[in-house]
Image (cartoon, rainbow, N blue to C red; front, side, top):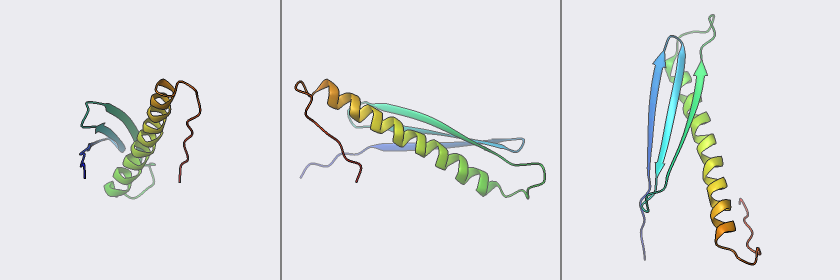
Length: 90
């Protein structure tokens, strides 16, 4: 069996009711993908920092998933000379 390790880093920054999460995915072959997500608290909302963290991280991870899928499709196109490869998301 061959085991690979990919590393995901998530940094969260808060400033004046705004939260920004930055995600970085690093593969064992040197590929690096980055995506950011944001959230902001409305003036009347209770101050619960965890909610902003969760939402910003969800948005960053969602974007990262889309970026990873786009990279997969690009790699398939580059390595499928006859154009017969297909991908399913299940």
